[in-house]
Length: 124
Image (cartoon, rainbow, N blue to C red; front, side, top):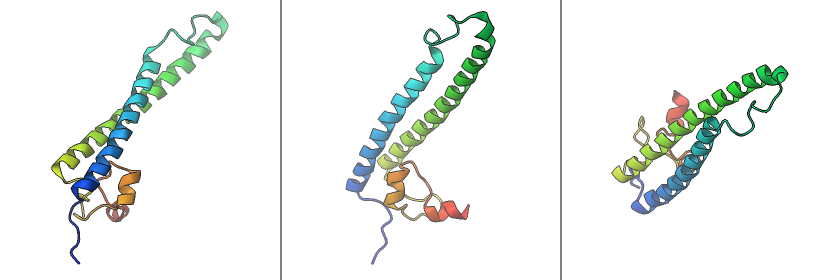
């Protein structure tokens, strides 16, 4: 039996649809995080007494920092998904960049932007 070296066009289309769904959700999440960082008119410290202002300012800054980190992480995820779409167009999607073998479909369904097979990932 000949070992497959790439996924068929039908399989690539299935992965493309999955990635587009994840990309759409990731973009919505990213937009939500961005808006939570930039909106200061909702539950902020403007209506609080001076006694609690210092504590709430600290909590507000911490919350914005965490949201910023999450937004950065989400943006990186979006970039990885877009790179996966490029690999689909190039018909190199699903090929492990270390072993050259196909990455298992189950792994790609769970982590659609994966570039390493489980075997290569475990050997790292």
